[in-house]
Length: 111
Image (tube, rainbow, N blue to C red; front, side, top):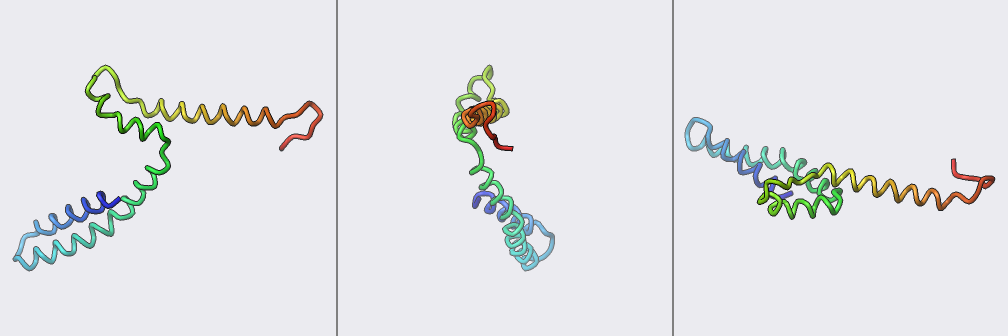
């Protein structure tokens, strides 16, 4: 999160320094850029941190192994396939639990 905020602050401060005018005007622009850049990128950094927490373990493992996959051009990292496999595994687990809960033809089931 703080990497994203730091990048936003640095970019905004350097943009503020690029304002034409005297040194005082440029420093004022850099100070304003620090404040605006930090405030603007803080929600994005927080959102990225929360998304990383929600990712399944396969995505994190795949992103770690991404460098080794990029070395070989014949192998491509398929994050969509990994996610679909994860969802299918969860669906199969759900179906197994549903069949365990069914007792018989005349028993009351959940509606």
